[in-house]
Amino acid sequence: MTVAGESVFISGSSGINKETQKSWYRLKFLDSDADIFFVCFTDEEVYDFMVEHKKNTPVILTMTLRPGIKAGKGNFELKSIEIIK
Image (cartoon, rainbow, N blue to C red; front, side, top):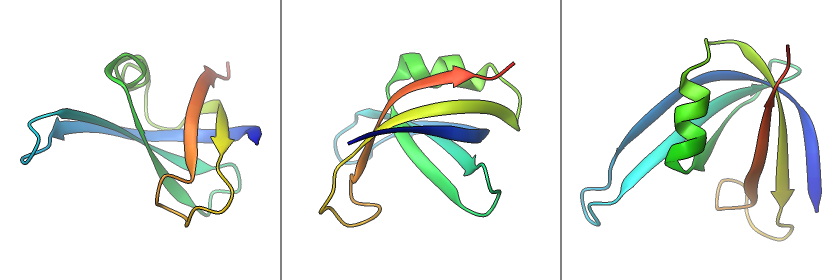
């Protein structure tokens, strides 16, 4: 199922997995009701695009939800981010 909605970009962080030595890129958002923070792991290109923007930048996120998977265990995949001007 694909869903889209407004959110606010909060921050980005990156690092290297100690076991696999692979890089990871994480973006943090606040939902439009300003009551739930959530984190999306993404690729370097999307990460670099978002960290150029200031904290509290409004965005529209499009995600694919995977029903039947527990929350926080890969139950969604970030498809696109659009900056709201």
